[in-house]
Amino acid sequence: EPEVTQTPSHQVTQMGQEVILRCVPISNHLYFYWYRQILGQKVEFLVSFYNNEISEKSEIFDDQFSVERPDGSNFTLKIRSTKLEDSAMYFCASEKSGTRGTEAFFGQGTRLTVV
Amino acid sequence: GNSVTQMEGPVTLSEEAFLTINCTYTATGYPSLFWYVQYPGEGLQLLLKATKADDKGSNKGFEATYRKETTSFHLEKGSVQVSDSAVYFCALRDSTQGAQKLVFGQGTRLTINP
Image (cartoon, rainbow over all chains, first blue to last red; front, top):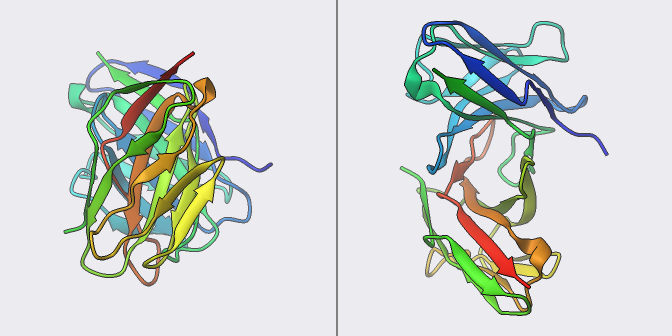
């Protein structure tokens, strides 16, 4: 069964460093998302991406964040200068269409720890 | 704005007990409603969904009915198993077109003891 794959599963980085979280969505999907979950808190929307551009972003997704689909298969989230409060589980999701009843398929997540 | 409120956890039950996890929502339009489950060490998986009022979503013995009058989508299962231990997330999506985000509740951790 097709699945969304995220790498790495766990990343530890020093404050101020850049990190890139990688995702391989399901191959025939067109809509892509990043969510994050700070420990003990809600899963929060960060950004949606369609047709090679950002469709929507949350107020969390400030200038230190960027997304890219560089080669038609990978979907990456870059954090330019990490802060302690960026420590969270980051989930990538993809779906075939963006309609409200569509199932989003999630990866297993990347746990980012900023020290 | 749109929001989802879930029953506070953690919830601990014995095997074969009846389960209810409450979920209520606030939305400006006509949302679709979802329950996602996260088993230990895994990502979020869709458990069930309902796209309009009075629809019942069901899967693996779990059920939830879209109640517009009470803005609720409570998750129920008649007889839980140890393998149902996981974190359960209620979520909504409220839009008509384009790439639209899911809005999640805070999650409810369920532990089933043998």
